[in-house]
Amino acid sequence: MATTLSPVLRQATGVVAARGEGALIFDEEDRRYLDFTAGIGVTSTGHCHPRVVAAAQEQVGRIIHAQYTTVMHRPLLTLVERMGEVLPAGLDRMFFANSGSEAVEAALRLVRQATGRPNVVAFHGGFHGRTVAAASMTSSGTRFRAGFAPLMAGVHLAPFPNPTHYGWTQEEATRFALRELDHLLQTVSAPADTAAFVVEPVLGEGGYVPASTEFLAGLRERADRHGILLVVDEVQTGWGRTGRFWGHDHFDGRPDVLVTAKGLASGFPLSGIAASEELMSRAWPGSQGGTYGANAVACAAAVATLEVIQGEGLVDNAAVRGEQLRAGLEKVAADDPRITDVRGLGLMLGAEFRDVDGEPDAATAAAAQQEAARRGLLLLTCGAWGQVVRFIPALVVDEALVAEALGIWRESVAAVGVAPAGS
Image 1 (cartoon, rainbow, N blue to C red):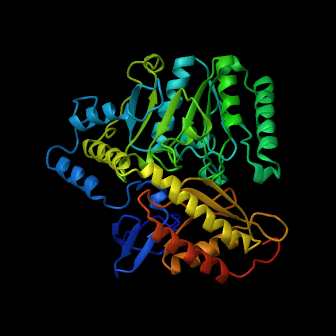
Image 2 (spheres, one colour):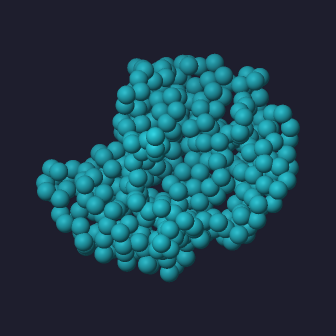
């Protein structure tokens, strides 16, 4: 009997990757593609950066699996020490796992144990993972929740300040979101029952919608007033992706718990949470652990990733190349009424498609994404309806590659016909 992959796995492209270099992927026929997916924002230093490869190869020859609640290993100790250079002030204790979902659930366990409160508030459009607790906090699309009930109790959803969705200004959307949060705390989850707010500084799967300084300040003020903890999910936005090291840096945010993964180790599975010593010490003994968390090779790759990001100025590069990419995407949008918004931060940008009736147009977004792939540019879609095409190249991407990608994008959009109204 032949074995194959699950039929419900959906492939964004038909490419069979054979090798990668920086922001490029080559298939088995050695056709070159601009990879503006970065493995969903994972390959922060690009494919096979020489320093990351060397660090991983060296570590493989020493020890691969040194389970970190059994023995310590040097890459982990070095990584923890180096994280002090980039973590927000006061977040000086870390726990490591493998995936974003695991880290989100570790943060949930921590805030519930630390506060003794059962509930958390997440925000519409957020994506926090696919495991039970993480999916319970996810509302970027029903596909992450449907057919999976009952999900975890104690999760309540409040609006995220999404101006495009509501048809308002950022200020109006922010005022509405905070007013509705207050209403939720008054009618659904009393502050004394609420352990944490869990928020992405930029919605990822939810459509690349940035938060605002006023919104995060409002969350911080309410958290401080009520003894609620603020958990900032930086799984996709961290490690320079937005043109600042952390996404919340754009908004003067001050998290109590920070969740990180994706770009942390340039493609090796590694995630973590950071909190203060005082908060982390309130976790119950034995509540943190895992067989593969803080794998020695992944930690070595993460140390090398940080060295590359710092040594090559990749955070600044993400900001500069992000400005170039945004300007080019806005020019394409200006010439095509189907693209109604270009938004995001740094090298985390999305182009939203809507039809003549103003409704989300997933069909045209998907057609443009597929046409781009045929022309050698790999992209992904996101948004509740799949109406946003997202651009997330590796942080090493250069001016010439961004310009090439924009040329392909313009051609791809032009090649895609207008979808019928209401399709």
